[in-house]
Length: 342
Image 1 (cartoon, one colour):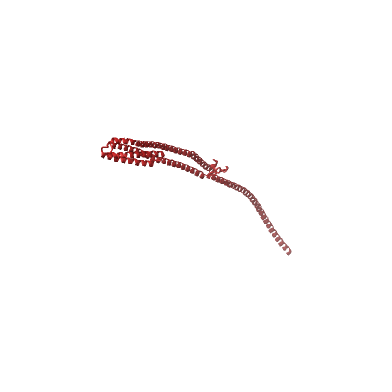
Image 2 (cartoon, one colour):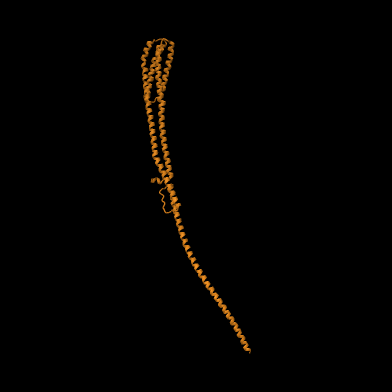
C-alpha cells in the first residue's frame, strides 16, 4: 500500500499491462511447447508406429499368401501351366514381402523392433532359398507332390519363425502405441493443469491489482474533487496534505499551494479593507471638523457683517454729525463775518 502510494498512475498501469503481457506470453509459450511435444508424439505415432503396424500386418499377410501359393503349387504339381502361373504369383508375393520389410525397417527406431524385423527378414530369405529349388523342380516335373510336400514341411519352420517375429513386432508396436497414447494424454493433462494454474495465478494477481489501482485512482480523484468544491465555496480553513506522490497527489499538492496563495490574497484584501475603513473614518472625522469650522466661520462672518452694518451706521451718523457740524461752522462763520462787518 505504502509502496504503491509512491508509484505514479502511469507506472501502476504500465506494471499491470506488463504483468498481463508476461502472463500471456508464458501461457503462449507453455501452450506452444506442449503443442510441439504433442505434435512430435502424434508424428511418431501416426508417421512411424501406425505406419509400421500397417507394414508389419502387410508383411504377415504376404507371408501367408506365399505359403498359400506354395501349397497350391504342390497340389497342382501335375498342371504345368497352372504351376507356372502360381510360381509367378509366388515370386511377386515374395518380392512384395521383402519390399515391405525394407520399408518397415526404415520406419522403425526401437532397437528391439529392428532386431525382430531383421530376424523375420532373415527367416523369410532362408525359406525362399530353400523352397525356390523345390518349386523349380515341380515346374520341370522333376518332383512329385508328396516329395515336394515333405521338403516344404522341413522349411516351414523358417516361415513360422518369421511369422512369430512379425507377431512379436506387431505386439511391441501396439504397446508402444499405447505408451505414446498415454504420454499424449499425460502431456495434454499437464498442459491443462499448467494453463489452469497460469489462469488462476493471473486472476489472483490481476484482480486485486486492478481493484486496488481503480480504487486508489478513483479515491484520489474524488478527494481532489471534494477539495476543489470546498475551495470553490470559499472554505480555506482546512489544511491540505498530499498523501500520495502520483499524478493525483501532485494535483492535490498544487491545490494546497493554490489554497495557501488564496489565503495570502484574502489576508492582503482583509488588511487593505481595514486600511480603507480606517482612512474612511479619518476622512469622516475630518469632514465633521471641516463642517464645524465652516459653521464657525459662517457665524463669524455673520457677526462681522453685523459689525460692518453697525460700523456703516456709525459712519453714516458721524458723516451726518460732521455735515451738521460743518453747517454749524459755516453758519457760525457767516455770523462772525456779519458781526465783523458791523
